[in-house]
Length: 359
Image (tube, rainbow, N blue to C red; front, side, top):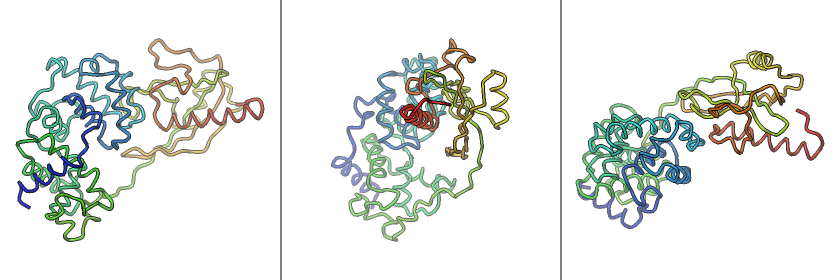
């Protein structure tokens, strides 16, 4: 297919089948595009929708986001993972207010200077939010272009990534750029699927090299597999007689930065020493089975240790950083910690029906 034929086929398909009613497409602004693109990094649309709606209800514009505390932003992000995205959003919002009057700059270079904004996100803000010609290359677009051009190999490899950006630049039109870029993302998300792509209904199937050579199951190639390192820790679940859990605010940087979580230790000895300094009775310390949570760059194997403490720890700190909380009311818990606490609450309820709870 010629370049103009490719563009026209994609745009015609978008008119008939493209997604036009996603929350960030309604009343579209550069701000809404930016937040949605950030949330959609490594996260599915169905997961993002309720988070986006809650985020917009609380932070409807750049100024509202910039005025918020980091803890409030992280709390609304809890469960989406990759928390550096939330921290970068907050930092970038403050930068936009301080240096651009709360407006988004209209150049690729200025947008890429914002924390957490890469080339593709900047292109999305320019094209979808401001109507300016700019190519994008998110995961869906990479897959469409890799198959169409027959690029064998992992799209993150430097040589292939450079070629994909060249192709994206070549095919991106000067007119209707917002529709075209949205169409390419939709095409990858709904037709050019990772597994079992729907080639028979693809608007560019005639020119697709991977389809012609029957290589859609190997293009694009997955990231080369590497064994992830394993980190181990012990998490202390302290309960009081009111059914509350003792939580601490994690440091702002790093894994689960800014979220409340359980006290965490590198060894059981460290955990016991921490409890001993606070005169916590460990005679009935209960060790639960080890669990695993996988991050992008390592596995975390953690052992929950359940104990009882009523009086010897402070109430909620003035900054809300640590203290006693009911799990459902704590807000902003890491997903594996929230699952653990809900399970423990369920076990406690079952035990109470059977007899006195004895932790």
